[in-house]
Length: 319
Image (cartoon, rainbow, N blue to C red; front, side, top):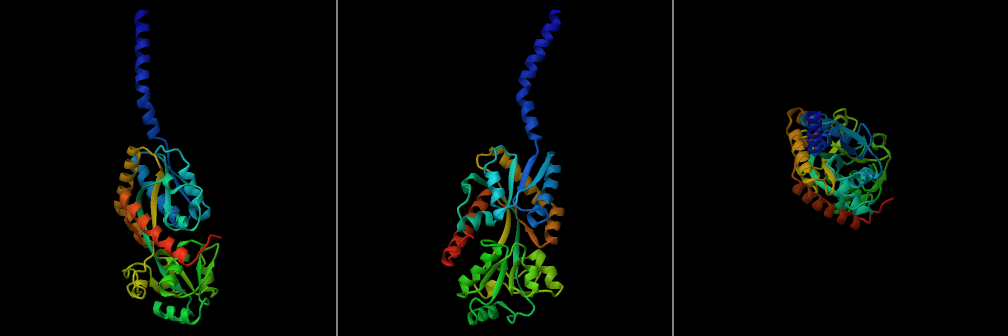
């Protein structure tokens, strides 16, 4: 009887001692949430799902995608900023969230509430023109814009979007006035229909339109020409210093455990180095990156300063 009682007491002590370890193990198996601040099927959603599938297998841990669209990504970013800093909530965001929109409007959260982890994917854009546009290159476009102020219209997905500010940067550097026309969709159908004459489009979706002869490539937004479009000049050949890049970055709520953040960064860098992921990115004209958190912070600061200057000088206001 006494031996049974001693055994029961011993088992109770052991169970109590093991509780913290069990709690940590159960916590590590909790799903990690990737908050994607746009709808299903877009570039951010596609990339996030590609990485999540690889990382879930690598980490032995479920990763779920939550699409939280709205306000150019700010609704989703706000969700992450206000989430518990426990290492289980991740923002898969695009650069306007940190480098363009904060220069344009007051946010519902402080940027300091989000901690940069790494930049995972980068892509450049192509300035597309409707087939009947008289200008055949960027120099001719600028001459035409000077001759016809505010008559050349360029499309975007909204005020403060990359396509809008990419056009504003041309106006800023070239000293011209064009007409910005925001659409709720991509604006590509309107460009092909001749309702607008120009649109800055991501490389991956621009190349098929160019190859099909539906739209014409005027220039790429990278600092130099691209291997994918070797005959298309860079805007910088006409406007030195012009460069617009899109990128996808990872943030977590500020104050997240250092060990959890370091693990996430390590796993994202492993995914960036994966040959299958690199091939899938190349297929859509995107480039793998894999930066340190400090490099990400520096890039945000640099681009935020640039867009703040352009927004102020062009007197751009949120709708």
